Image 1 (tube, rainbow, N blue to C red):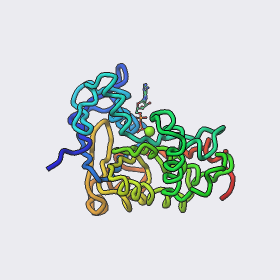
Image 2: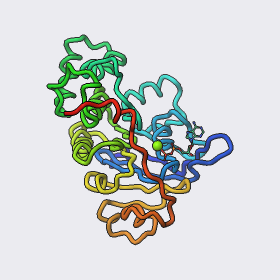
Image 3: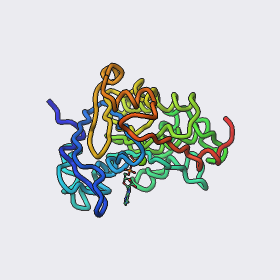
Length: 267
Ligand SMILES: Nc1ncnc2c1ncn2[C@@H]1O[C@H](COP(=O)(O)OP(=O)(O)O)[C@@H](O)[C@H]1O
Ligand SMILES: [Mg+2]
């Protein structure tokens, strides 16, 4: 049996005096796409930052690919981060770089590959998101959905073993949203990676993930496969699934990504 790619064991983390995560344990197996759901401010982004080693757990452990991320010194941490792909919540493209140069950026920054090889890799990544034909365009010429797909191509440029997506659906129309959802799944399976997707979008994520964790009050308050989640009678889970305002979780409407919305042209 191989060890899980990501394993959090009784993690506690807070900023100064305030605890954000009090006791979080979760597992992501290789090949899996796992969703993390929870209200605004429940610590979802913080969880990704713990896995990426940007912040350290105050107790408990965060294991990634067999290594305790909280214990890594600078060199090993750098090597670890090279294996992670991250699509940030408001991770926009570099507006003054073309689609091609946006995707080439991490390859130029993190490798010594010659431009001819970089060109092949960039076109392959753009092909994977269906946008090879758009490589000469500038970000302002893209729709919101296309921009998100280019960001996806950039995030997978270095063939990460773990992809982390922070609210990748925010601000997208239903069709683009569904396209991104399918892409997240396809890219995961094509890369032989694992993926963690932080999202508010229940319908979309239940359609493409293997497992779901619900976060509230600094803890995992529910978990299961999509089928288990749909059949659950847990109040937290039902509230989330049905989009009810009243229930154990406070109601927060996710904010659309205006920065991206305002910068877009039509397909
Ligand atoms: N750098 C920081 N310093 C202090 N508090 C922070 C910082 N980053 C986030 N927080 C707080 O931690 C809580 C969890 O944040 P976050 O992980 O971003 O939640 P989510 O992604 O679920 O909306 C929020 O209350 C937020 O205000
Ligand atoms: Mg967040």
